Image (cartoon, rainbow, N blue to C red; front, side, top):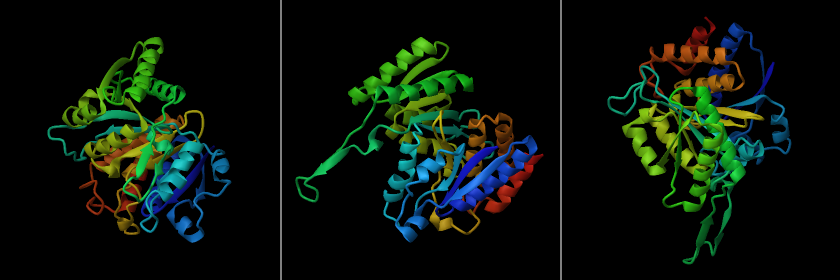
Length: 351
């Protein structure tokens, strides 16, 4: 029995979560997997209603679960940064979800803006450090609002944090067993202090413990260039928090858009969160037109991370089957409603 915390969140979040749970129930029935869901109302609506972001008991409660399935956090009536820092980053840091895992995979019948590239060319994974770097909030402001204003944002990189991310990436590359190549994405020619730590740890760990994995390096600006020109060059990319945040959005676009892009904030020794990358998309809320494939993909990632490999593979096969019947991956243009797509994937997964 897996205990799953469900956070529908804001906008279209509850809609896509509903379809993800529908598919989970279908495939779990086929493979004899049992899941118990508990819902939490964290997000913009709760904040506007109560003024509370997370109750004091939230983190302790969530630690009792095997995984968290999240729809989206983000509300047009809440100032940007409040929910992101107060809910998402707060949970990520307190639950020590130090890996952000983003598969970048182009499926059949999904359009990519890259000319002459197909599913055989776009299939790599980004492992992003998720709890350090510029996202720690270290820094400050002096003389705010004056002509002499100074703003300092400090990137924090520890050997422990860098090395555990790099080790996870090496292990993932070995398990993936595709190109068996791991690329470090950094900026050694300018960000010399932080990048030096990343580069030394990368080669020291790789040479000592992962001699079977080919080690490669690319500056972050070159990485974005090669992701567009030659995405087939990449197997697994490991990078810091900020660079990972940027290149995974580019990855989402070349794999067909945010509507098909899932991700996970992973604590390999604890509780992980799985979610679609598209955000709350409030303009589509309640219209039954949003694409639920990213949320279904997040459910697939959750199964895989929990060790239910067969069930996860079946969900992915069902996704591919349904995607080939869809007219588009864009909201309102799919040829089917949100709930119809969920029904179709659930039916295919249960066969």
